[in-house]
Image (cartoon, rainbow, N blue to C red):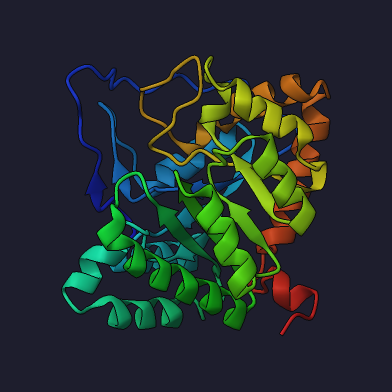
Amino acid sequence: MSATEPVRKREAHPERNLERPPAPEPLRVPVYDNHTHLEFEDGLTPMTPEESLDLAASVGVRGVVQVGTDLETSRWSAELAARDPRVLAAVALHPNEAPRLADRGLLGEHLSEIARLAAQPRVRAVGETGLDFFRTGEDGRDAQLESFETHIEIAKEHGIALQIHDRDAHDAVVETLLRVGAPERTVFHCFSGDTALAEICAEHGWYLSFAGTVTFKNAGGLRDALRVAPRDRILLETDAPFLTPAPFRGRPNAPYLVPHTLRLMAETLEIPEDELAAAIARNTEAVYGSWDTDTGAADAVGVA
């Protein structure tokens, strides 16, 4: 397996427009995409990870966090981060993987390998982990909880961030974080809650990462949550190749489309684009550390 080429292919539904959107006007203040999946090939004109990163850099996206969802993609993510200075990695087993692995007696073995990968210097987060009650029924929730709790402990052991996948499970995610003890830097990836969850995150110092979903016409609740989020707890992501921002919803997504989401967020908050970009860049580096060194945020501030 090599991180020079994608290792997954997004399913092409007949109704999807597979043409890649044009590049937006470049940002004047560079930002980061703190959650992307470059391991996926998508669209009529697929890009290698390097081509995607080059295009992102041309519009002011200076780095990404490449996120794993199983052992294969976590290893791939760590390899890409070790090779390309524009990439940091997150490693984990997606919550929907946990019941399948538990049924095969492999959950513990795979969690041990995630812990090993998390020790690499350019792996700066454990994720995406969490709870998903949309796709997994009652019979799989115990395995999801076991996996989530172990990922939390791995993140704390290595002093790195936690990226949470939370789908239809807000209350259970919050309860687990409070019971087990959340890592110092905890990120709600693709934040999908309301103002109440945003206020809980603010109370505990957790980060809210907004994806292209915040640009959708029917996402008024997400924009309300953005308005109440502390400015020093806001992050930005694509979740590419999914969740392409308006006006290109449904088409192939990639880190170079981050400016569309940022500009909608700045408009929602009624602040200048450059001011929000600078804040998001500071927040992202506070969570993951510098892209330019092999020293993570925890080491930089002396966290054991």
